[in-house]
Length: 611
Ligand code: DGT
Ligand code: MG
Image (cartoon, rainbow, N blue to C red; front, side, top):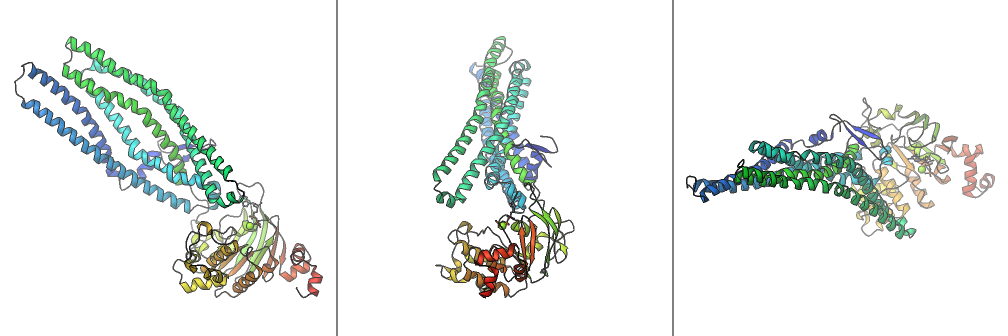
């Protein structure tokens, strides 16, 4: 980690650079708690130094006790009692400081966790389509839960332990040096060995934590996809297959976890042996020094009570390093989202347009290719939908219809050409103003687990009940909603579970209409409704009580028939354009489609009065 930027390497060996180092990022998110955090760090220093003081008093006590026992000294027991009193008092004070310190760290870490989680959620919510097609839901969920918890743990525990170990080690080392430099030197000489082993351990465990983190995300993704796709799993009776898949992911995670933990076991015996050598050195060298009269018995006891303050931080280093590497891997994942930037954002001089648009939609030589796709999806598309007009788009599956309409609300941007609304490039408008003016019923209907009323009023939260009913009538949904046990208050399940495909489409249409958009885009919205209902919907769409340009993707001739303009798309190109009449007469793809769908030749249909 460099001082001003943090670098992370993901599984594809791509180095991601963050604008801040991990610690300055944490510091930034400790705002409001920084003073408390510094006080806590100071508290950690204080209570650890106090740990050293207790053995110091013990040593003094033993010397005093020995003197008194030998009938020496002043025979005054008050010094003895004062020393005991001071020891008890100090121990109680230390316990109180440790207690408050832990609470303080917890408070700081929870506050940072709350702040980062909110920030991440905000960031994720405002991301563009590219982001959502890059990151899997299970992976994102892992970042805002497990990974974030590792970040919290770093503030609440790892940093405290680092400070604790250093303070204990150095204060004990200083004490040793002051008391007897030669004894101190003979004990401390072996400590660099431990640092060397810990650095080796760090190098070997770091990639394992990164891998472990990937396995966890993969397991969560399996679970999330299986749970949200449970209907498909059931339909194909693939429960065993899915359970097996999850079992494998779980096993993989467990094995990586064991392997990561075992890494420490390989280094542990060396560390433990070196740490255990310290009391032996003390016993040997200290014993000789007592015999020589170089140190007193009390001093020897202080040393032996303090030897843990040298040995334990050494032992703890491995554990701390392990946790720190976990934080390292997790924070890379969190910071990747934290510092991610949506590509489609407001222009610097974005135009505010809080009012309604006139509704003129123009495509000016638009071509488009998905960044991760090989071939362009749309080629040189030009057409105009005038305010209030209905433009229908028809074409075989995969020809680019959905891709085309997604450029109107700027979900994607053209690779060439422009999309204009009321003569201004859509990229010049403020995104919220642009999107608030567009009512979109997507092809893949998603309803929230909320009441039907709540779903219809999603874009206009305080919509009056009569208005909700009005829009439900426009979309021919009112009738079936009233037949439901609790009418508009019926709660639909996640993604609209409990409703038929056609019912979901109608609610989604009502939701799009409820914002009274100046541009309404319907992506195959009536594909699952019966002909009769579709007729009703078309009738309503012609008689809306607000002005609106409609761009309707459809597969049925019955839907496109009344449009002011029909665009026929094939392999990303407009191959025919005109009214129903014009296209039938043109005798191309559209005419063939009419014959196919109505089951007879144009001539016969005309004779029969169908056309
Ligand atoms: P549909 O809904 O089945 O009638 O088909 P369209 O006409 O709505 O097709 P569309 O625009 O969804 O897809 C056009 C082509 O673009 C097709 O070959 C699939 C591809 N495509 C669609 N979405 C994505 C995407 O997110 N990434 C990439 N790389 N390709 C995509
Ligand atoms: Mg589509």
